[in-house]
Length: 99
Image 1 (cartoon, rainbow, N blue to C red):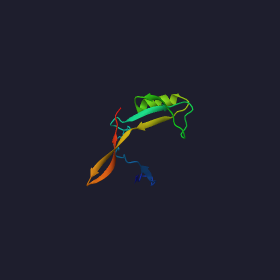
Image 2 (cartoon, rainbow, N blue to C red; image 1 turned 180 degrees about the vertical axis):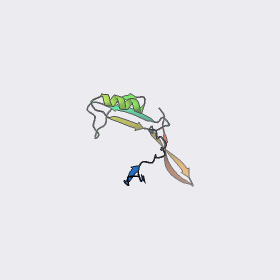
Image 3 (tube, rainbow, N blue to C red; image 1 turned 120 degrees about the horizontal axis):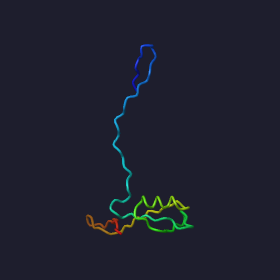
Image 4 (cartoon, one colour; image 1 turned 90 degrees about the horizontal axis):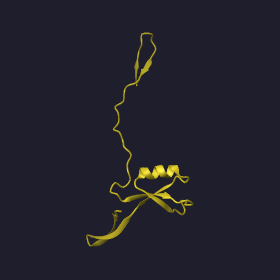
């Protein structure tokens, strides 16, 4: 902040406009379509999660969960474990599954 000296001798702070930061949008999970969003079933707990109705998008899942008593969603991402040979040694890799 800069200070400007008025004629009365008092220092008055002047705010300098900041350069607006790039607008950051909310990241969506798994843009390749591998994430699936489920509402929690009634009676589900973090120790024993049970999947309920599937929502099409994360936004839909959040809205529906907010409207329900539980307010919980589960995000499931499925991968297939495969072995690749790199330099004569097998290396395990994960490949995303699509719906």
